[in-house]
Amino acid sequence: MSKSATPAPALDPYSDDDFDEDEDEDDFLPSRRAETEPESESEPAPASAERSRKRPRTEEDDAPSAAAVVPRNPPPPQQQQHILWQPSIFGLEPLDAFVKEVGDWIYAWSKGRENVEIEAKIGTLIDTRLPGRKRFFLPVASETILTASDGIRFESNMDMGQHKHYNQILNFRCTESRALPPQARITYKHHREVDSFHPSGRPTGPGRAEGKIRVTRDQGAPPEAPVKAVVEKVRIADLNVYNPKQLFDWRLSVNVEIPHPAPPEGQPVFVRQKDRLSYTQEEMQIDLTQVSGGPREQGQPLHELELEFRRPAYLLDQGARKEQGKPNRYDELLRVFVNNVRMLVRNAPPV
Image 1 (spheres, rainbow, N blue to C red):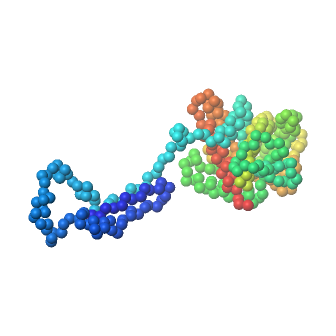
Image 2: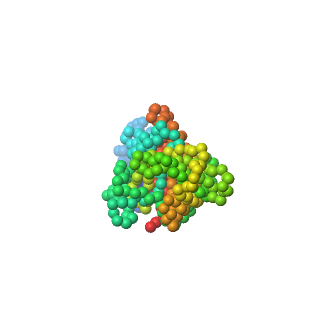
């Protein structure tokens, strides 16, 4: 009779290591072998003992014994199988509360508007109630949406080293994406532009300063060359997001860019130069921009990083379909948008 094998232990679904089957060196004690092992042929049993053990045969005698069906070499343990966990006891995965709040806020401020711009800028929340440029602080452990921004200023800026770090990351991702299907690849364009700003004659919002009309041209273009854009940017609403464990915070903005048919007459209030790399993937666009000049003429250029929807009208159409109970991709688009912002923030260079 072959030795019994100790059953293999259950596999841990989180382990990549196979368990070795345990085999005892001596499954049977010497005192038990006489009860379990067959008689030796060299020492036949007495005839009287043979006769005393004989009894009429039954169907059970013809059936194979348990020992007969045990293979001499036990099969190897089954290969580890991937376990598909249920998303919840209800069989559903709830929408991320943070993403839902962002989506509700965007739709509430954008609904019914034309020429909407929806963007998120990476930067730092500064506490204006403290001396110096000290970062805003809250006693929270994770990413937090602020419902009030009194005493807070958002600075959309980073140093040159951080800007270069993001440039390298995005260039690398652009190269990597060549292995993806065409619709998922990342493309980029390099823009060198000049913006001149002219007074619009009306405030950008209640209690805000006078608006500006922005005229954009290519750097080095002759004066008679056509302008690229003439728009008046009106701020609608901002939503600040605090990241206590990350180097950067971010601000979500809804703006309206009103197109104008022609550049206004007269001298501009100020002029700025932009050196921008735009990376696009599907419905998203990331802009990495170095800005020189501007209203304050700070000597050192500003370095900005922002993400925006390429087709905000499509996003709002999907939001309207969701509101009407029709099939839509609104939540999916918002999830991709927030994921991109989070990944940019979390991939900041180490301090």
